[in-house]
Amino acid sequence: MMELEGKKILVVGLARTGISLIKFLTKRGAKVTVSDHKSKPELVEALEQIEGYDVQLDLGGHSPKLFLEQDLIILSPGVPPNIKIFDYARNNGVKVTGELEFSSSFIKEPIVAITGTNGKTTTTHLIHHFLTQSGIKAWVGGNYGPPLVEYLEEEEKAKVVIVEVSSFQLELISKFDPRHIVFMNLAEDHLDRYKSMEDYVNAKRRIFMNTNQHTTSILNADDNAVVELARDPSVQKGLILYFSQKPSLEPQIMNIGGAVAIGKEIRVRTGPEIELFNISNMKMRGSHSTDNIMAALLVARHYGATHDVIQEAIDNFRGLPHRLEYVRKVGGVKFYNDSKATNVHSVIRALNAFDENVILIMGGKDTNLNYTVLKNLIRQKVKNLILTGEAKERINREIGDFSETFLIGTFEEAVLVAYQKSRIGDSVLLSPGCSSFDLFDNYVERGNYFKEIVNNFR
Picture 1 (tube, rainbow, N blue to C red):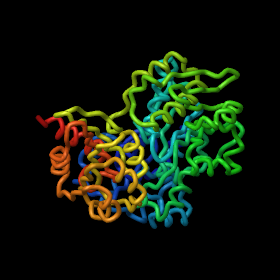
Picture 2 (cartoon, one colour; picture 1 turned 180 degrees about the vertical axis):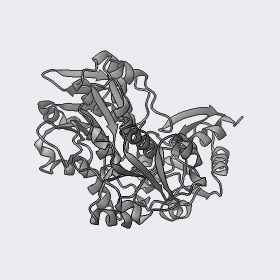
Picture 3 (cartoon, rainbow, N blue to C red; picture 1 turned 30 degrees about the vertical axis):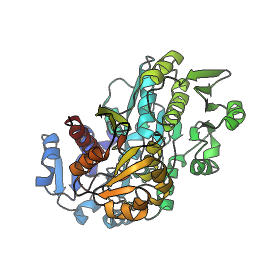
């Protein structure tokens, strides 16, 4: 870390990750500049958090000359790496990297990296819970929780560092070398950032670029796209453990090691013996929750989480907020907040958790996803489709004919119409299939507003 002293380092992006980087770098004597396309008035709250730190500001745009004066440029995850000014810097010999790559280079403890299109946050949380409740010191962060750079400030180091990793964070890795890689699933997402599904997949597959004989990859055997990735020779350099809900795969998986859910139990092999976990009392909805548990316990058992702690969590954990979260029952109608469902694959998982009589609220920022794959589920399970937000017209064109559909002007009106159309025994489900950035700062704000509206119903 002493190598940072006196180095000229430019941090791009003054959000949470940028703020954490500034604090870490300035404390170690680096000459830090922060650059953000937003103006000073737009960044008042962020600037308050770095008040007193010795940092130069480049706000309201990016100054090309400043970029060439740096020893290192570190991008926050939300900053696309293909902006021309970054190529300009690279072509002039300035190293450009991401926060994940930078921070992980200082970490000697084993890293568990969890990625995939959906389920990674819940899986990350479960791994951390299983370990800490078993008395094992584990740190959690990355895309979920604090940025990885904040671990470098910890005085007492963890036995294992658990990091949720997004495709954005993987775009700039070169030496990132996690001990365990967990890949949950792979489906269409972020097509407002990527030119094609192929580009998105290529960003995700970078997590395997440094796989070696010490790496264990934990993969979803029921996801064809993930299985296809596993055929890559780089992945096969290490150990591969699969999890599955297909009984037919049990002999093969148990022979190597992994987890299979059959009926109301999970069969797991991480050593010489096969262990059983009961999922008959599981509180989380949806079969995807079983995937999350299997992936998490395969990691947690390796690092010493106990059978009893894992079983207790399976029995009692109700899931994280904004992920098929039960809100309340009003007049015989149940309300569920699935605001984290920002892509089509998430909506499929949500609808598969219900039998029928769903009133589905969708819509938000249009990220160029294909909604036609929902048509059969809409036809089978959705009584009314309530559409709102920037994407409502396109969603209506693609799937509006498969249910009684209403296009609504505001989010609040959409929730009210959903309640008005409901009858006893129905379920009102907010599962937008879109990002929230047309109307809200993030999916949390959207989910909290939904709950606020529902909790005011009488």
